[in-house]
Image 1 (spheres, rainbow, N blue to C red):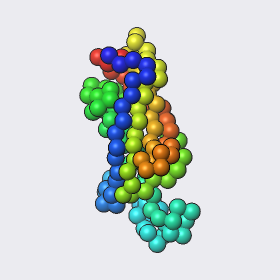
Image 2 (image 1 turned 45 degrees about the horizontal axis):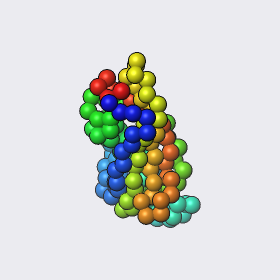
Image 3 (image 1 turned 60 degrees about the vertical axis):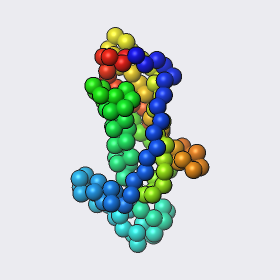
Length: 134
C-alpha cells in the first residue's frame, strides 16, 4: 500500500525517429515537431517534442511502474512550462499527494525536470485507481 509522500522517479529521452513515429500515430504533423528549418524560425529555434508524447511517459509509469499494473489512469492535468527537445535527458517524478482509501484512488503529482539544469519543464497532477495499492 502506498502512503502520501511516496514517490518514484525515472529518466527518459526521445530521439527524432520516435517523435516522427508519434507524428504518424497521432496525425499531428505540425512542422514545429520535425522540420528543422521551420522550427529554426520560431522562438524555440529547433524542433520540440509533442506534449502528448511527453505525457505518454506518465501513462507508462502509472500503468506499469507506479502505482503499476492493474491501475486505472483516471485523469491527467499538465502544464507545459518549457519546451522539451530530442536527445536531452529528462527526469519524471511522481509523488502521491492524496489517497482516498474508500474509492481506492490517489492523486499523484507528475513533474518533468531537465536532468542537466534541474529546471521544472512540466508540472501536473494525475489521478489513478488501484484497489491493491490505495
